[in-house]
Image (cartoon, rainbow, N blue to C red; front, side, top):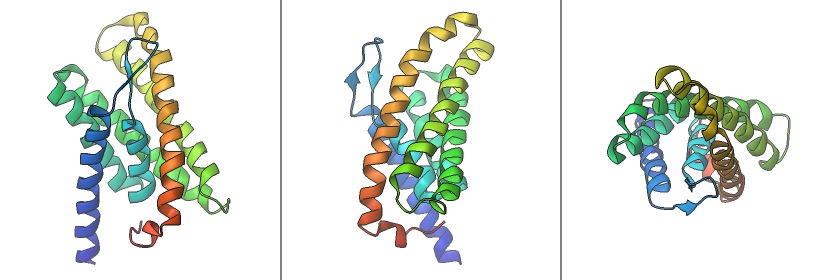
Length: 173
């Protein structure tokens, strides 16, 4: 039991680091003047691989560190909560859907899309309410939609490959 917990904590730390690296290292310029990166894909993958609880902490910490170390301190708390909720939702929904579908692709897509909506609405709400941007916070919605759809695409490609490689038998929920 203790060994399983240590393994989960270690994997959560690795997923937090992978989320940080995937967000900061790989950047593709987007038409909305931002960047597209596979970081949200790692957020979703954290929830699916580690389950809702450990996945939420891994995703929240990894994403929060990006804002903290990049100078976007006003987003640190919001990012932690939003990305943790997204990973939690993705992991929980994947767990439910994977019992109903016999492949990994459809549950990955559906859980990724649900988590994407949490990120898009979460950042809109956070910038609107807590950062005082008012309705101008809506200007970030198109970029966040593109970013999270890329994350859904990323997890839909990566997770079935990991499942086929039997990595899932090692990582238990």
